[in-house]
Amino acid sequence: MLIFNWPKTKLANLGVNMQSACALAISAIMLILPSAPFAGDVLIDNETCLECHEDPAVAMRHTVHQLTPPDGSGGAIAIGCVSCHAGADAHLDDPDVSTIENPANLSMEAEATVCAACHLNDHQVSMVETNPHELAGLNCSACHAIHAAGEQPRRSSETCLTCHDDQKGEFALSSNHRVLEGVVECIDCHDIAQKLQVPFGDILTRRCFSCHGELEGPYPFEHQATNAYSVEGGGCLECHRPHGSIFDRLLREPGTQLCRQCHAAPIHQTAHNGLFANENCLNCHADIHGSFDDEHYFPPGVPPATCSQSGCHPLGGN
Image 1 (cartoon, rainbow, N blue to C red):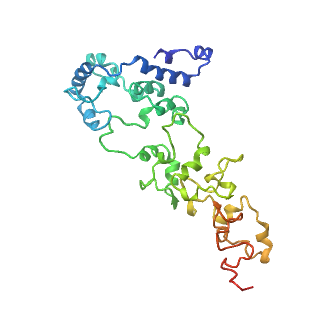
Image 2: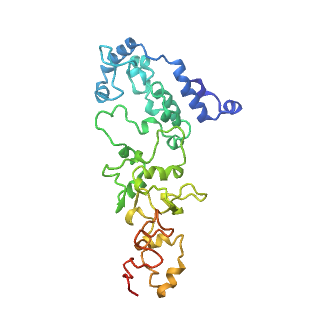
Image 3: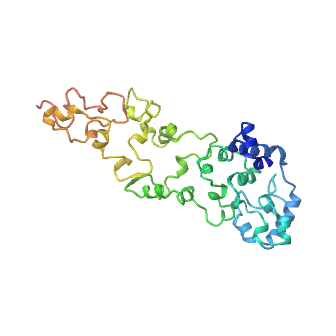
């Protein structure tokens, strides 16, 4: 653990930045920790702690952090108060809050080291490497309530929205992803558990298609605005606001106005004396995500050559 106390200059000389150093330290923990802490010591410490601190133990019942039962059962790893809280000996001599270590008050790197004694996974590693929560200085306890976990189960989105006020407001708009109602969770779209944090825009289209698979394609006639892998970027966010919008279907602008951000469409301003200049584009170009039949995204039954079945020109009409 001394790696956290090394001067940054020494780390720099080794070609290692602080985030990488933290990740290396967490990875090294598994090499020095025993696979199963000695249950006897943990049980004795638990009994001593519970003389004053019974409420946290009750709250953690039936969670992954439930204390090892007095009979010593409970799996390969014994879980005790001292597993997370250092300084028990000093705390017994002086039972003050200042004499016991509270992981929630530690830095992100220090608390991540405590948690890594049991939780060494991709999420744990990413928190000290690339996770945006780490860059914001948030430690594990900022999102994970250990002692209160058993009191009232919380949806993950409730935790997220305690900090993300702007997004909470967007979910209240007339067109929204139904996060506030509990139909959708933030982690359905935002994968915070992955080790390598891929820029969200690069994976957005694939994430959207996990629910909207009927729009995935591939299509013989692609609408390039939906192509998240083009040089310009693109993808669903080109047209849709992911959290909420005042316009239908999470659109960034009303339908026709949105289309004209890219398509000036002069033919619609001149043909038929400009009759279709203000027409909703989707009245004709209905297959806007992509088409199997037509390069102009006309659905079957609305051929652009005749427009005979568009609803404006009946068969045999003028």
